[in-house]
Length: 319
Length: 319
Image (cartoon, rainbow over all chains, first blue to last red; front, top):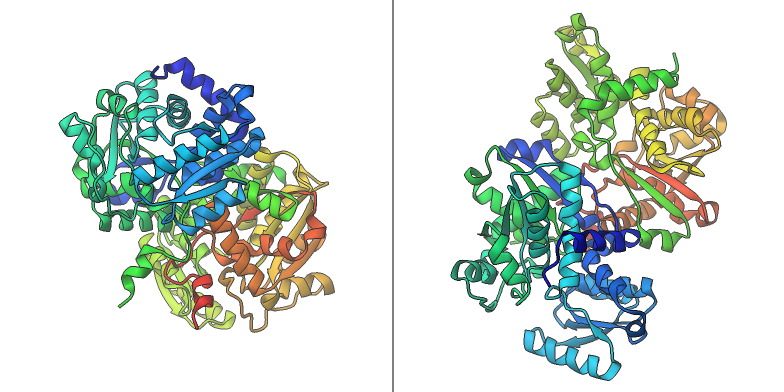
């Protein structure tokens, strides 16, 4: 059932001991540059470096005791994997993680660091799902999907819940969109707590399945996505899509160049490390200044897990 | 007069509208690695990217109206310059900034961005002071020294004031030491609010004038300092040194390699950008784990103004 407000509040209570109440930061410089008043909810500073800790903790700590002993399992390109491994370790159970061979090394190492047991697969949805099915069959673990799961959606919804408490009223609230877990959770919390706030999602133009799905009202798959925002390669899910259709105001895409520029601007001006996926909302604002001019805009920065040896603005300057 | 607690509290009240109450962050990973419980007070997320905004705002907003019209002036290798330029702009007066030609480009640009009027000088204390004298003579501006000024010391002391409010009791509180403004202010607030907390300063081994001065009880100058921690090149001042002698427990030095390692660890695990000077306390802990084992340690991260095109761990990997 689509999480209602008491369910989201219960999730917030359940995960409170295991996640950070992340700070909300502002930047005079960026506000001045964009003629808007931006508030950044720093889920890049969240445990395990991403908002995914919220959903993963809610799912793992919702599990009945008799299921816990067999562990949990998932497929994930990275942040959900780390978050689930960490949540499982805290609850005292195993986490079986199916990861594409192409996942960033820093994310693979982090999953291992949290004690997750990794099975690698091909970087396709089919291979992920097939490999996961085999792992679950062998271990009896409970699958915890990265986003197409109401416990996950309720957990991710707690970020916006906190955000409204921290900032009060917002004209617009923005998240990036990949599978739609953060977006659908944010849309629900906004609907319940601040229904006049517009929910606007930001997606790479090079991975625009949510944009196309939203505008055609049909769940379309991600086809050959090719973006630096490696957390946003997945397609929307059957549970996240209807919530997004009902409660999201607009999905806007941004170019790869804008994503890199927004990422660098955030590092430089705000002194925080965000991964490319987190830069999407700011990239969208930079490309569409008129829409956001004079508005009070809340942005959920989704994560900060990025290799420090491979910065896109350094690549660009090479001959 | 050495700032007393009411003076520091008045400074906190005076600067409140113009500075951030910066968050305190923690990292499970770093705590686990070092067997300590560390709290990081994020002055890298402060306005203008450093704790210097506290002292500069306190000094500028303490000025009587009749002096304001002639502006303020200082010599600074960077962060104080930005902070003073910003504070002056808010108060509506000019800021004349004497900077060494060797100051990082990112810091020069930031001062210009805040409307500061820059006069370049040679990178020696003598040249800085002589150039500043000429500027002050010509403009009638009020000099605001980067650290050897009780208004500055009281302003910097507000960071520890906030820190104790945010974390409660600490076994140890640490700052880097350059000219000693942050350290002396921190020592005073600690003395007033948490006298059982040890104040430990961290200094580059390659710029160890404070270490030598502290241990010989004589104010010794910095001689050919050569460290990546470009905020810590200056010598202690005649006002900061006595406070440090009285209220600081210990000064410990760290190697350049440890500074870089601690900086990278902070970026990677905490997802925040700190400049090399901010990495000193963590570098000292990494080199002296036994001293800090099992302790509750507060670290003031001094600033985050660093070029994103010139990361020390990338340099190291070049052939």
